Length: 609
Image (tube, helix red, strand yellow):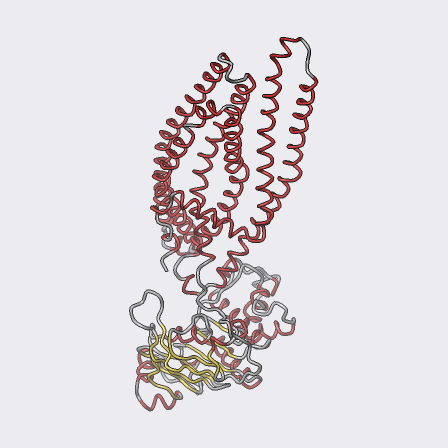
């Protein structure tokens, strides 16, 4: 699948694209479709009333010649005026107390539901999707999609649909009164609108490019702020400013060029419609003179004609906005339709028992866009309660094996089973809760230290949280040193900015330890001690040994610092997508093979027992 912003070719953005966008909007309306349909019917009723008022005015003017001739005012005129009052007040009440309230409820509901829907989708999508785009662009697309969807609904409700309905009803009314005048007035409307819509199609590529550049600008902006320490450290403030300025300059040029050129179409359409409107009035006066039309009909055309012309302009302007907004709205819909790579199949269940035997059987896997498989015919058995270490050069597939084990990704071919059951037949969330994972780069949320430690199990007890803090050597480094006056309730800042690299690692370890206390069965360490000093690393090793003694857990670890893994039950050397060697530290050192070479290359020296 191509990148999100490349999914809507400019040549497709015609009236058919507009129709497609309306279908997308209707689908995204979800549970609010019924209420919006009622709102649409109310708009029809209100536009009918707005035509009824000038029609009643026509009837009054048609009675005026008899009033002038006879000097007596017919009672029917007062009846018509009373009807005009009822139409005006009734229509206003229907509009303010029924239509407005229903539409406000729908738009506010959707405006708050769409971001939640988008977030849920993003959280379900696999890492392969998230690795394709930076966070700034993703956030920009979601925010913009919600904003544009809301804007489209508002424009349809307040301008586009009412204007079209008014024109249709007015065409019908004038045609019934005097088809000749109606033909003169409405003849230019269709070619004028067609000319405008056709002209707008020429500007769609520029608008789409503007939307793309806006997404790029959000990405550049967010990345410069997210990586502020690197920007300032290398004195690249000017460079980042110039990058954003270049993108924004491109956006400015695109917008101005389209805005200037589109005025020619507006002028041509305005001149054409204005000329025919005046011609209709002149023809109406002439028809009254010839006694083939009535004064009231001419008054009706004059009263509704300006409204109709304003409606045409409103349709054109709103159509322009909607076309631009639909580009973002359709992209958001395509995001919501992005296939979820790792999901439950229809037979997925939670096993009644758990033993903990994992088997990779000739598994192959490759990341999207890569030419060769990262893992190919990869086989590995992990016994219950076993400590398995994966080592090897960078890029050989160690982290990929971990990602497949934890179902961050699903395998391409082969079999991966838990207790003989293919993991794809196991409920995804039940399976993932088996793992307590400590990554090399621990994700820290902009919240308190306590919330970050307890993230996996927010309902953990205070005793469990304190045990996790002690096990990860957090108590001494963060609390006893007095760096955080509020202790565990201290805010750690965005991405843990108030924590050092080692402290972030300890938070990750405490989080995983808590997960193990609350039911997780497998501890996964992906370079988990890379940022720790030797003292803290020794504490972690002691914690691991204590865990293995206290609880029946399986440990799978990746580490270049072999002091972390030399006591593993089984060390697997991965190379060229396969397990090249396996055995204990002592056994592999005696073979003098790949593992021994890795030890020498890393210059770790003799490892103490």
